[in-house]
Image 1 (cartoon, one colour):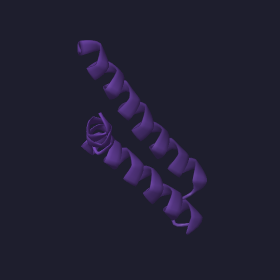
Image 2: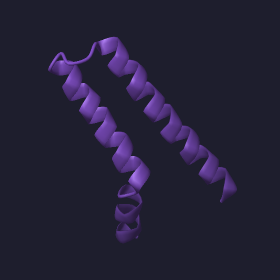
Image 3: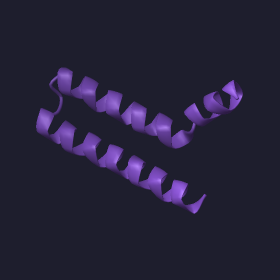
Length: 60
């Protein structure tokens, strides 16, 4: 059971969403991009991730 939870945690979509969120957070702190742009991009990534997860859950 624990192994299944760990496997589910290491899905590619989850890793990509997490990395992109961290990346834009760091870029925002370093003042390479504006907070508004970072917020928009991270919001799109997270919305896509949850929409995709919901669609996949409905098929099962």
